[in-house]
Structure formats: C-alpha cells, structure tokens
Length: 254
Image 1: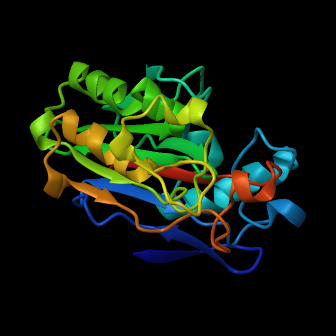
Image 2: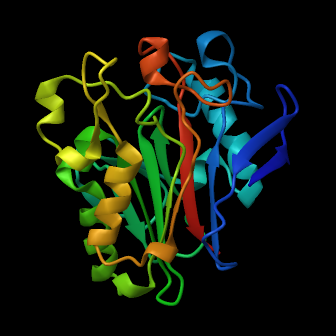
C-alpha cells in the first residue's frame, strides 16, 4: 500500500505501508520521491553514507519521519557493515557495526537503509518488541534475520507470534552473481537459465526461507513483490554503478 505525507521538494513523500502489522506498530518503506536532493540522489535520499550533502539527507529524514511525528534526531539507525551484528536500541542515534536493531522502547523508530538489499521489519505486538535488519546476499549468508529474531527473544518476543515484512529489493531476474557467490547458497535459491551466462540469486526467497526456519508462520510473512533494480520509484546500487541514494525501512511501537 502506498501512503503519502506532505513534504517539500516535489510535494509528497511516498511510503510503502506493510499490511501484516496491527495498529500497535507503525512501519513503512520509503521510495525515492518527495525529497530535497538532486542529481543521482534525486530526491528522497536517506543515506548519510552517500556523497550527497548531509544537510539535505537530514532534511529528507525529517520529511520522511514527519509521518510518525518525528525528526531525524529521534530515530535509531543501524551502522551497517553487511554482517549479522544486532544491537539493542535504547534510544536514538547511530549503532555502529550493526546490521540489525531491536527494541522494546515505545516511540523509538528503528531504521535500515538499503538500495537493492532488503529491509526486514519484525514485530511481536503482544510482547511489545520490534526489530529491523539489513539483508543483502551477505546478510542472507550470515543469517542476519536469525540473529535479529534471537535478540528479539531476549527482550521477550515469541517466534510463534512474530510478524515479518520484507521490503522491495532486487529480484531474482536482476540479481546475477558469480559462482563464488552462488556456491554459498542452496541450489534451490538460485535461478539458472540457458540464456544467462551466470546464476542469479532469489534473495526474496532466501529471506523468506530463513524467516520460516526461524519459526515464523507463513501467513505472518509479507514479501513485497516490487524490484528495486531499474525501477523509477527506487534507488538501485547495482543499476546505478554504485552512485545513488538510499531508501529506508522503519518500524516503531506506537
């Protein structure tokens, strides 16, 4: 579902809203529309690790988190390294060397930045615990989702009650890799076609299979059908050659 929040720039900030969560959880995933940046970062670039101006990125974060009544200084952000480290967020700020965040603090948004990788958002609404993790192919190999679920359990979450959303990310059709990467995945997570010189990874399926292995019921997992590669609504690291902006996935206990 697409929602819009009043902003500046081209007028509206677009947010993809997961349908899997209940009313006690606020969650979403940004598109690239409605921000202040220009050029290759046009317009809602939310990544401070890019070469965009920091003041514009912070302004873009303010525009996005206006949907929650928050500003850029109110959010907890993972300092991602394509690993599986998970931090317990007690307050706003950057959590270095973490590809996952969990919290039981109400009103604290957890944020993951991506541009082809998936932002995986998780919640146990009854326990009052939410989590978010960054899952690209390295995160899938490192079991980033599994580590995030385990840290949520430390805060009182129950796997049987978890709800999960997998954001727009690169599709199997666009995710060509070398054999050195493919060999790290089970064969059923690869797609091979005679016309393709190299294998492709089905990242969405890999993440869904990992969430199922964590004990999350199939009906509690929502996977976005959208692909970020060569899609005008999203930034794509791969299709841009690495010079592009970032989207954000976020989740918060109301």
